[in-house]
Image 1 (tube, rainbow, N blue to C red):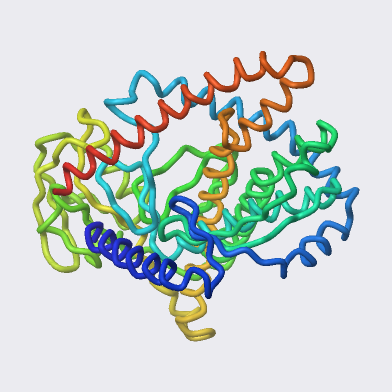
Image 2 (cartoon, one colour):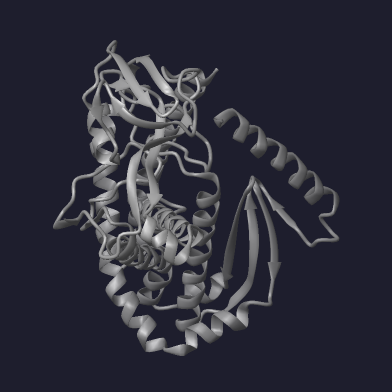
Length: 417
């Protein structure tokens, strides 16, 4: 599956970029490195309208957001530093693209949900910068759509001269706005997820962390309390469905997507949590028997590409649910499944806005976090001293993150082929 999706990306890249180069002037497309950009003036009025709805409210939100931004800057920096001892044995970062399953990647994003969620990340981030720029009196030169290789997005281009003339606090608000807007969208998505889960689907954890990532084996412990059953139950559990098999993994050629697993080694695993618990207790070299709706299958557990000391099967899965009979009689089957899909969509919107929004706060240029720290240090230090701090820090972080991503990709590709 991963190889197929990579081919789709490659074919899409060739077609889109060929057309962009051929019709560059006619379509008014700018090509800047790996970016295709088309600028327009049309949406500037919309940004002005949103900014003017309540300028004081936007200022208040950003005044609260600035401490949040610096908090996450510190958190992300600490996480990077703590990950240094395991950079090569267990890299904590990997390049993640929707639909791409590379062995050892910490997460696999579904293609459809992932593209939509990534679009919300980029649009909300850029419009956040634009709205706060207008609140602070900075002109918007242009707005546009872009394509980073094959990934769609949007951008807002403020007037750099206006920003330079702005007071330091205004610059801080503008630089932090993109990530703060991402975090606000993540919070709203979380509230929607809780609402859907508590009322209809269930198995929602109240607290952060405390989320099960749909379609993956990643789980975290809850903080607070758990809601294990919905107020208005819509589904019941009927096993765990295999959604994807990692190429060259122990499960490759044995299990197939769509297979519903009901027990492992005779242990009932009708719930997602039970399935994950049993798999987490398997050991390298162990012969594991999967009892499924299509028969029994035996798999020898191999070492994990991410951590060679842990067992690895090479499957992704989600809870296999069935619509309750009384619900089916009342509203049919389509509406419940639409709500379930909506829950998955908001989950990925939450996850990607949180992850990318906080990553962008890392104190390195050209990320917003680097601009924030540079402006903050400029309050008390000269430009030369600020450069002596920001530039080495940026180079060091770029080197660390680049090493993690390149090593993760290289190891994953070697396992694929």
